[in-house]
Image (cartoon, rainbow, N blue to C red; front, side, top):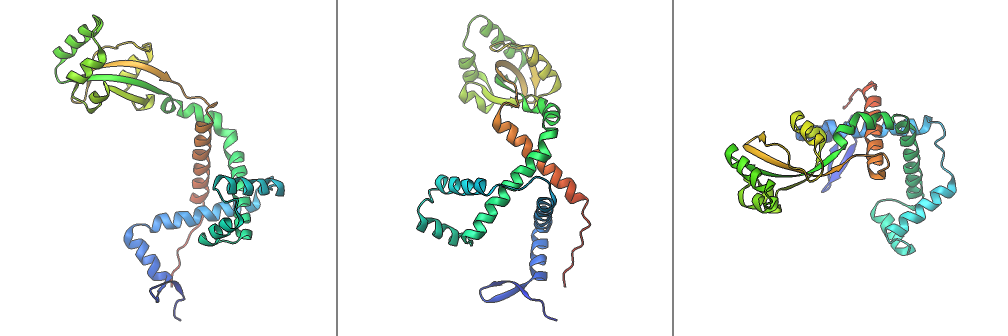
Length: 252
């Protein structure tokens, strides 16, 4: 029996087997299947989960907020937007409700593990702002350190002598995750105070003078960070659910 068309492109039908073959050829089949499985897991969990109901008034307010934020208060504009996105109001309303349910599910999944996960990740979440001067010879590094200690401008010496690209911004490296620093360098930096020049460090391509500008410790009080960690935990939870699925690919 002939397969039904999955897509029709320029009046030419493409069946599911051809579509799967194209995805496999492009290396995207795995991602395609993972997205399907992710949707399957979420739909099942939303149907089976406890305490995930959303009050109708909450959904209505979310719809109003969306329209205001996207400048869709005008009914005609909103209708045009719905059509351009292949939806009617009923579909849109349903999608908003599902989105709120998913957020509620994420809260349930992530909240209990959030503090523990934050502690586990804190080394990489904490950041430090550094400036540096990197030169090829240790003798020059020593000379520059002496000049800085005697009052010379770190920024000016960085512009004149540093061999790294950040010399154009006075050697400023910007915020760096503590977890990405080499252990020895991190230990030295952790003992330093803001504004302090630390001992010359051997680095790839030369010798570096580092100055600690500022410590930026991570905190769960940071709403953006808190939300990012919840998203990570939620995606890990979904991935674990997907791993347990018994999946068979069947194409005619």
